[in-house]
Image (tube, rainbow, N blue to C red; front, side):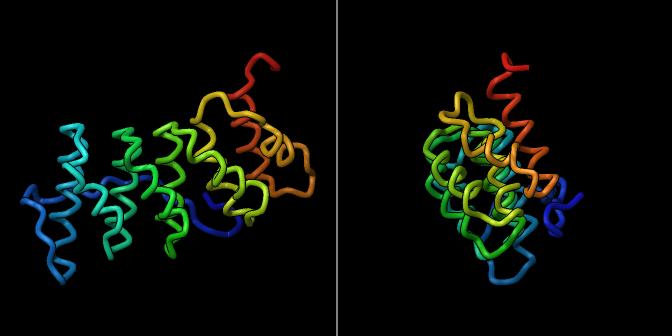
Length: 173
């Protein structure tokens, strides 16, 4: 599916060959790094700062996969780097960073995500709403309500806003 004309990819697993992570200049090192990221997820460890370094890797696919791993690990120490990734040049990296911020459920990301909901493009609103969907006890939900109630908003933004609203205030339904 897509949001505002941008493809919204599934979250594919990129399997590596299980070799130790080795930083090399050629793309040949990418599968090993992806394998290392999976290993960190399996051991529920951010590798003593290694995952943070991979979030800053020059290859967008590694940054994207590292962001998903950061979210799955739920490590709040990675929130500042994930917030930085919200300005990445690659759409898929920004999307995964927003998703990861939601999975971590750290309130430090709420101001940025709310700002994107309020002032961002339709696509940025979609990214931000995906992140906000998982963060408990949002106060105030006015940014989400504004998107939900504004008929001029993109349909997908309104659907995602409804989902966030229902998750945050189920007693109103």
